[in-house]
Amino acid sequence: IDYGVPFWAKPPLSSWMTAFSINVFGNSEFFVRLPYLLVSIVMIFLTCRYSSLNKSEKLVPAIILLTIPEFFLHVGVVSTDLFLSFSVAIVFFSFWEYILSSNNKWIFIFFIGLSLGLLSKGPIAIILSLPPIIFWSIRFSIPLNKILTKYLLLGILLFSIITIPWYYLAEKFSPGFIDYFIVGEHFNRFFDSNWSGDKYGFPKSQPIGIIWGFLILFTIPWIIFLITKLFKNINSILNNKWRLYLIFWLLWTPIFFTLSSSLIHPYILPIMIPFSLLVSEWWNEMKNKKTYLFISLIIPILLLLIYPLDWSKKILHNNTDKYLIQNIDHNKSIFSLNKKSYSSQYYSNGKIKVLNTRELDSIIYNKLIFSIIINNDDYKKYPNKGKLTLLKNNDKKG
Image (cartoon, rainbow, N blue to C red; front, side, top):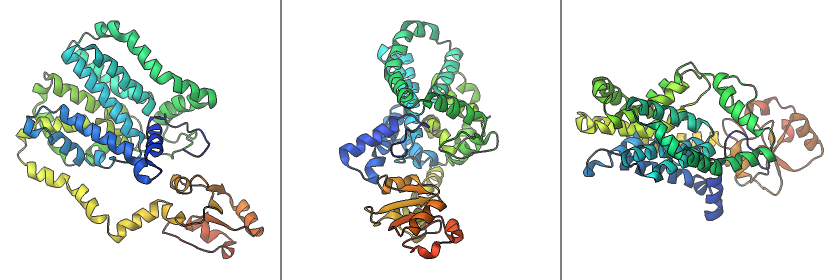
């Protein structure tokens, strides 16, 4: 994620897609985000395809999905969680298709989905996908042993061909990657919210069970309707293969993360598709459709309305270094005091370097011409600030 430095925290699929988009269309903010927008659109169409509503209402799950805050906020955002969600969806839908048709191709698409998940965010894709499918298969006496006996070797071969080469090469050319990514990112981060070995993030110590709070908060208002329907129809659901399949898919992720205190709200993104499909299952029984739709549209409409306003511009200016280094002469040296942001790396084309206070004193002493980004608090404390000229600033830095 930094120029010339191997990035150990995530696998490369989302970065590959961004790099491909930049190479084909050009280096702009829109094309950096384009792959994520396209994947979001594919996920929307996938959701419509598996709607059990009639032809005239096929778009209902898509509308629900787009008005779920968690999904809406990720459309077009550069995020590994979006590609993970897409991969998990492929796994679940392909397994369902195989159960319905017994067509061999779906089993191979199933393994491709797992492979993409491993290249999207790592082994967590397997952890979030396989247990609910196994539980569901046991409930309905699906002969998994026969399926596995028939296709397991070919599936593992396909899975290995897609995933192992990159992991092998990553470790070969950047020794220590496997230990950091598999042990550190998956086990140490899960069990220790204050994991000191984290190279990229920050301590995310949350109350145990906060994942359920995220699920409720980021799926309002639809969560209210869904909880009501689940409780009222629990007996019939237990015998409905499709609805129970969606429920296992939906509930396993928050159940798995219940005991982890090191997490953030995008961890629920992979279950937004089953969530929207479950809501749509009882769409025709919904008495207050207009009320739910009105409330669900508040966030998208508010964002559209506030975007041109001054205070929304202030939020943007304060949370990216883009506006600080715009129009700065990039032919001259540009630095950041103590640490640099990802946006400053992107908008300076990788030219920005980190300095400490002693190094800053040295280049001032040598009367070099340069630009430097400094946090406002550090700027106030810096004894030689009188020798610097303020070019631009915001509420956080200048």
